[in-house]
Image (cartoon, rainbow, N blue to C red; front, side, top):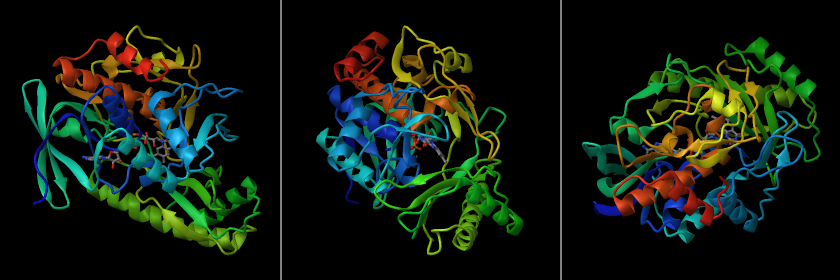
Length: 422
Ligand SMILES: Cc1cc2nc3c(=O)[nH]c(=O)nc-3n(C[C@H](O)[C@H](O)[C@H](O)COP(=O)(O)OP(=O)(O)OC[C@H]3O[C@@H](n4cnc5c(N)ncnc54)[C@H](O)[C@@H]3O)c2cc1C
């Protein structure tokens, strides 16, 4: 086995927006950082499930007011260097401001950014177990291609989306909304072969879905045609229209969702080819790589952001990040529901929402942070995940340095010194 057992200040599980934010935050606060990612690339849902738009960087409204800067802004700068526009785009479907992504250039931008911060990135490696003594995690076991090894650290960040580190560390958690109901999962489609000047007409798209529904045993519930756009720098058509209800987190349900969604995608492309002008030579360039997972587990945090915090735009004395995306619920496949952020157009994420209950050296980032089932519809987006990640990374670095959890004020001062908005 070529791996050695190593010691770090901070170990991060997961390399999505939350994990990358955490790695930058911790490294900038002076920590020696390892980031462990089970795929062969960084980016989380943006690259493993074609979620090709960053939400949460801007407030909702007529003008794009920035809510997230710091680590997230560093990434946008890195992408601009690679020729990605990154200008805020006003979505005609949702009236929100988003940043459109090119997934391949995103992967490279993330690699370069973490290398520049001196982070040890471990790809094709999965946090598989944790050892704890009382109220602290001592080390994690990583399962990599050539076997298992241990990473010891003074502080840890769970940025796995699915709370996999908290799970193996024994933190109590709820699944979905607490009654076991999960937000719908979505299989993203990337369709190539369109004529470059193709104008896409939503009425015709809806008609294609109607034809599809008359032929398939797996209905599409998004009869409004779903969400679609062109992939930046290509004429490919990117489409979120295939939702799957997930009854539970069993491998059986995942297998069924993945396999049925792929069947649905192929039939849909056949129908688009036959019915939509400009799609005559269309082909399925890519599904996934995996189905888009909106929700799994929520480990207990020391504060749970509530629905009321979001709709009132609540500001906290212990705030360490801003969140500006509306509540977007996919409780029923095909029927998203939105609710706006109140107050100044953003609310605060308090430090305690990033802190594991019962463990003093475990911090949460991205969609793992404490939030009730409604607030989660807002906190989970990737722009916000960069901000909660950066704050968790700073908190973890300070925990490693001083041996105890830091005060919110200290975390905020470090974040602001590095350009974060709070
Ligand atoms: C269909 C769909 C559409 C969405 N639309 C948008 C949108 O348009 N814009 C937006 O901003 N958000 C959107 N979201 C939400 C958003 O994608 C997620 O909430 C967001 O990616 C959360 O970021 P994260 O870093 O917390 O988690 P993730 O992006 O899920 O990243 C977690 C990472 O951890 C890794 N990991 C997991 N377990 C382990 C382990 N044990 N060891 C090592 N690595 C591990 C995973 O491989 C992954 O890379 C959408 C989600 C879905 C499913």
